[in-house]
View (tube, rainbow, N blue to C red):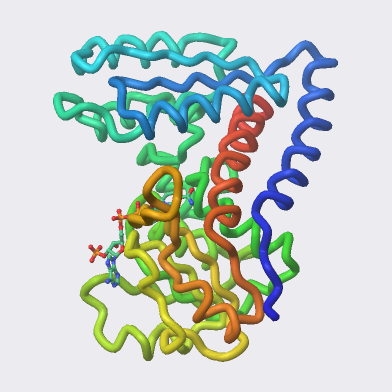
Length: 291
Ligand code: NDP
């Protein structure tokens, strides 16, 4: 049986460390604050915002949940972002994606104070990641994947990591993070995507295979070499009439087929997912630490 990399347990450890640090900050009169801005009423986004707010409160962080109507204009949203940029009680700002279609998301991200951009999407933070400047913010999901590997005792240095997917949210920052010099980095990284040829040959050469493509159970046994570590970022809904909700969540990896070959593997749900929110909390505390 492979080692099951349990994101929920590892996230609990992250929270325990954060609680200690937050208590220390509070003694010095500082409370890290996170503002989450939601435009519109997308149910999935609402659920994400609710769980972020709940986790903030649970940790004793100052939490502001700003819910704006679907018809909010670009300039109205920019004005709210500017207010939050100036608010000294707010150390992290996140504008929940995807916004309604009249909103230019890239322009909103550029309007954020990079020192409060706890999602790590502002060009200044992307540049810091590429430069290896530790003061920048790294997107939460890639950071969570790295933390899972570190906490599970998996050697990243010198390993061949194949990242499947090249999005700005997961694949690309993850590749930059794992190839960075120093602790948690120093990997040899290959990034593959929808145009890659001989994909199975590439993925079979991985010591650590990370799938972030949004294709349910795409990664099969043939894609994985014996003994590889497999991290599944994918969260996909597939129809399932046997469940109450009519669907179930699966990853980008066919777990039952791949797990017998892997030395360690993440489940879905309960793998990368819980780490993403834990890293958002960690980035908010870091933003407060750095003021
Ligand atoms: P995107 O759709 O933005 O990017 C998908 C990437 O996968 C693209 O680079 C695409 O290639 C590549 N790709 C798609 N199909 C294939 C294929 N058949 N073979 C090889 N490469 C392929 O997705 P995201 O990065 O935003 O998300 C990826 C997955 O991770 C989704 O399931 C999402 O739900 C999940 N996710 C989970 C999070 C968590 O907290 N656990 C957080 C964020 C995302 P190309 O560039 O050529 O189009």
